[in-house]
Image (tube, rainbow, N blue to C red):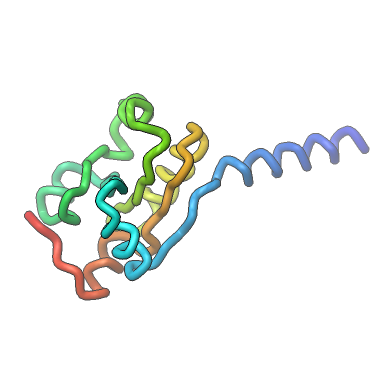
Length: 124
């Protein structure tokens, strides 16, 4: 029983470490976006992106089969500002990036909807 509890604690600890990214609100996101070396990563679909996106955003669809391959080719030392439409896919994507040893990953809470609601305008 003791070994089982230790195993459970190890599994919980490792899963918490894998989600090493920070959630930010639209105002914090914009402050981070102002730093031009930071990369805005849009993990929505091409159709969603084409309908309107954050200026300068790089598109890598979280649901595409080659998502891990594409993000694996990115510079792990850069800062990534990840977003989707509502915050769910981007939180998963941010956790993936953190699990792949990306150093600085931020997730936009509420996604594109929250960003637009805060008064920001997408480009098409």
